Amino acid sequence: MKIVMIDYGVGNLRSVHKALASVGAEVVQSDDPETILAGEKVVLPGVGAFKDGMRGLQARHLIDVLDIIAARRTPLLGICLGMQLFFSSSSEMGETKGLGFVGGKVLPFPENELKVPQTGWNQLQIDPSQPLFNGMQDKSHVYFNHGYYCEPADPSDAIARTDYGVAFAASIHRGSIYGVQFHPEKSQDVGLQILKNFVEECL
Image (cartoon, rainbow, N blue to C red; front, top):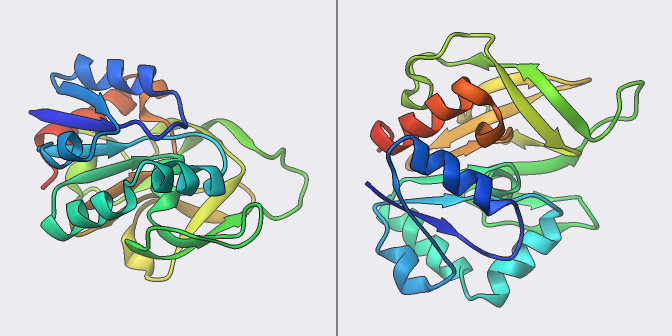
């Protein structure tokens, strides 16, 4: 299975590349539109600010490429910032328009006694019928590192939730679009199982 991982100038691509390769994927890392469009499946990783992520995609002329991928229903996985960019907009660093593959907004955590950004392990409440979670137990722990969270306009788009001062979507699925707010490449065996499921099971 040829997986193209999009390099758009943000994020720790090396660890995601290594994790995908470890579950049997042939991984190509690229910002070239033709290479990306030739992928059997595509991964959009990323860490950092929403506005910077959209600028990185725009500067490399990749927004139209991602629109084509979504229209073709090529399986597309967003990781952390990558998942956030799938949404309609974010309030981080001012209101910024996203890719709009999933209706909803990216919002800041509410002010409370919890430390922001959320950094560390948290439990997932999963939809076990989802192929992304094959072989996983509910309440499995995964690793998060983020200061903003996603809230889909359609609650059914959230296929896993967790709670950090507010309940939020930890994973989403709409058509051929998948997303995880956490870092599967840092989530040990559970994270590798999720990546393996995307490579082998998700259509």
